[in-house]
Amino acid sequence: MNLLPGPVAIRPDVREALSEMPVSHRSEAFLKTLRNAKELLCQLTGSRQVEIMIGSGTLANDAIAGQLSLTAGRGLILSNGEFGDRLVDHASRFRLSFDVLRSDWGDVFDYERVERVIRQDALVDWLWAVHCETSTGVLNDIGMLKEACAKRSVRLCVDCISSIGTVPVDLGSVYLASCVSGKGLGAFPGLSMVFYNHQIPPAPGALPRYLDLGFYASRDGVPFTHSSNLVSALLRALQRFRSTNRFVETLDLSMWLKGRLRELGYHVVTPDAHASPAVITIALPDPSRSGDLGRQLEDAGYMLSYRSDYLLKRNWIQICLMAEWSRERLVPLLDKLREICAPARRSMA
Image 1: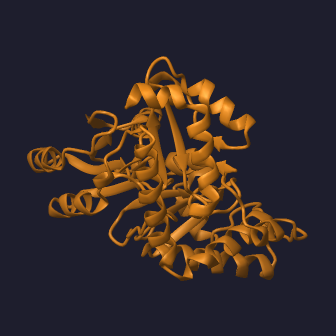
Image 2: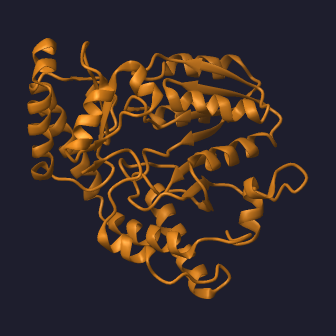
């Protein structure tokens, strides 16, 4: 049972799409598939445009950093977890000029402080933040960030890698946003996306070809070789989002699962009020170790997220609902947690 944040459990029809014979990235068949996938992505997010690239979320965020390197103003990066810190690293590698506002892991951003900094510093031209901070499960409030940025004409960039496909996301007034195929969208890993709502010209003298969003846009999204198989699988996965019931079902299932975990005595790190329904982070007490528990659950057939350094360091383990699940399918996991972790439950009670 795959309860990882990625790669996620793949539906049979999506696997079937991946196994089709590959076609040329210059063929009309591929271009039609790509256009359809881009159209569904924009419908899902409210964005005007999206470019689909071959690579991970790191590529998408590097492409965003590349676009920001073309601007003259200074930026503000918000961080309340591992992936906010990675945005800082992206920006540093591009030698961007920026400040950082940090909040504790598991806390939401101090939105009043963010608005105050934007208001008082006229040089702030862009703001970059993570929507779903996967390291903790915190779901930061894009709406409040959009409002704060709109007041001062600050360009908002958002890492939506773990949020698109798990919660409703409106990118209508966002400058740039990143996503991937292999998490909430339920497709195979290997494709990354950058959403945008403005014209982006090529920047041949300033950016590498692979990171130049304007180059993609000028070539109808296919400046060089693409993967027809990955795009076909993505299109098939996107078709399940024609109904909004998916988000309601994920939220209901998450609330039920967290309730059962708390009944068993487990501490869920992120309060429900600002938690992603798709990432449930559990803090284990001493002497229990998340690495030991994760390996025991793997041996029993349950793949949970625990191997990342930031999880091991904090003795955390995560259950992720990126794919389609039901209460009936999760009950055996709860039974196994009860069986394996009886000493931990007693110490946490």
